[in-house]
Image (cartoon, rainbow, N blue to C red; front, side, top):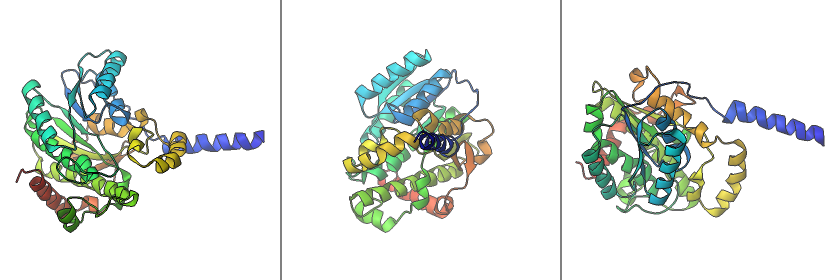
Length: 315
């Protein structure tokens, strides 16, 4: 029995450190005088990203929906980093009105923006305040509008970066514009199966958004990247059904990255020197990777941009 346990433990350690643990960002960049916005930064990968940037001296804005949770996160980060310039600003990506209000408040109160990290994400049923499917509205459309409203500030602060947290599951995604027009969503239903596919499709949208944004910002000093953070054990599973949480929780605790590990590729895209020629590209494990064929489709990226502009009331 002891031999079996020892073999099982060795196999777990081998799999974890070689398959699941992922790469680490080793850069020593300092960010004094720089300002970063991180959406969904009250827990998980976003909070770990915020802590790292705060330790580097950045002024960090936690752009979150839950005030109590975000203020507690800001307190934790200030205490651990020794950086007092960490603050919460309310942002609900499921409300385009909230996105506009956040952007207006930020632009009135902050003179610069060096890093915009579109980190927040969700999977699950429901509709946004504006009637869009929740995954599409939060994961893509809210971030799309937020980024466009802050573009002038990013340009004025250049060199600056936009980082879009996507997922490897974007490879399963597609964008059916007829479904989007008919249902204001990327899928036609709300079952667990539909929610899974809506998540995959929305993460493809993140890859396409970063690609088209990079094309439109060429020569401005603002660069853009999308990424897969790695399978990470966070509060993300709170959005899925109870039976699915029960099924996934033991596996995620054993094998998935912790939030610090999940933040590494985000930090790489935000901080690594020399990435400017790779603007618009997709990263995983702190390295350049090839996105899916759909994620490299410039015509699809342009059409998604144009449709997103109309849905946000910008066109």
